[in-house]
Amino acid sequence: MSSNIAVKLSVEESVALVECLGAQGWETRHNAFERLAQQGTAVIELLIEGAAHQNWRVRRGCADLMDHLADSRCVEPLLLLLNDPITAVRRLALHALSCQGCKVCPLQVDIVGNLSRLALEDSSIQVRRVAIHQLGCQPPDPRAVETLKSIIAHESDAKLLSRAQWAISQHQKVQ
Ligand SMILES: [Zn+2]
Image 1 (cartoon, rainbow, N blue to C red):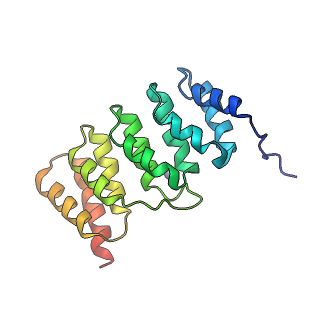
Image 2 (spheres, rainbow, N blue to C red):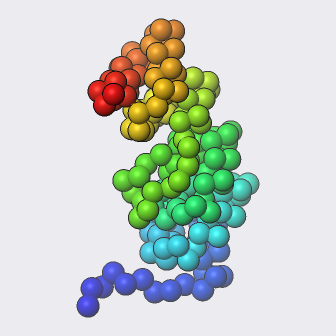
Image 3 (cartoon, rainbow, N blue to C red):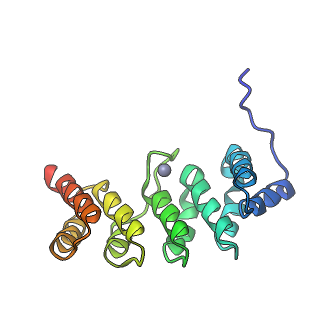
């Protein structure tokens, strides 16, 4: 038998681990992340609660876990986290919503509108770059092309522009 079968945790143990996602120390957070990830979708409701936690590290950890465990229940909480005041939380929520590679089953969410808003308006240039990259990973969509054209016309940041050029080529290639 494989040794990676997880021990099922009690709700109390899982709640305590969600709190540990907010720890200052990386090792405590990482250990809590791994143990929660092993619990699979059994901890989704706790992650949804954690997505509204007052400690931003807990919110970030929950968004990160949702990248791997999310089902349709996570869509609304992740969309709310796109407006989080902490840049790292927005980045993780953005990744979790748009990355299908880490998921067991893809989330059903129309992300192009949200990606376009973040690509154009987010206060963090890193979040904008990630949003632009993810726009290039979406199925062909005229809204994405419009956003990317506007960015290419008005922006001067080199990394942002190169991502926008790549992203728009993804939409034009398949037309
Ligand atoms: Zn991912």
